[in-house]
Image 1 (tube, rainbow, N blue to C red):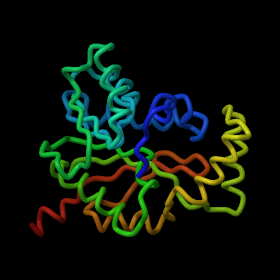
Image 2: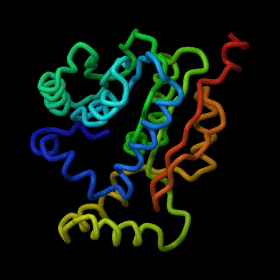
Image 3: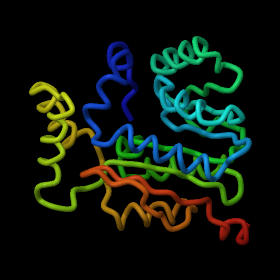
Amino acid sequence: MPDFKGEQATYYDERITRLVPGYELLHGLAGAQLQVLFPDEASILVVGAGTGKEIIELARLNPNWSFIAQDISEDMLAIADQNFTNLGLKDRVQIHCGELSSLTTSVDCALCLLVLHFLEDNGDKKILLNQVNRVLKPQAPLLIADLMKPETQFEREAQLVFCRTLGLTEVGQTRMRHNLAHEFFPLDRMRFSELLDECGFTTPHPFFKALGFTGVSCNKSALLLLLG
């Protein structure tokens, strides 16, 4: 998984909206579901919290939600920490820099948006999902979105075309083509569902689809509780 540093961290929020069709909609739909699931209090883990933008938007939806902002990038979390301080959110956010394996807190819900495709399906994806499952309370929801394998021969090209309308430059398109071929490790829908099942989650239900990106909701499986 890339450890965003320096300018990569500084300009991440500006860049990501040009790379993911429906980026704002994805996060808006995730927030709407959390409002229904947790109208009162909730502890929410945000995996790959980055500069904290996701948490800032969620914090505005409910003043009684608290958050764990997890990321492996110190530079990204430093920006997040300053943003939380500026907005008066410090007392609602626990910053966790590093792997989830060292996190001991249990949470009511987890979000893992645009993270898993950075990990190879050689056991790395499974490690992360198992770590998320471990800190979730029984039957707690997970909202996860990822870059998927293309479902048509033209989906990837259409994705790049649309990103041009979002402001992606020619240099950015060239870099994105390279990343799509060499830096990301997308799954097809069948393997995605299989992996979630292997890691103790229920059948995923789609809530977002925009060209190469898909968002689903699932829950920590009750079956593990029965077997345990």
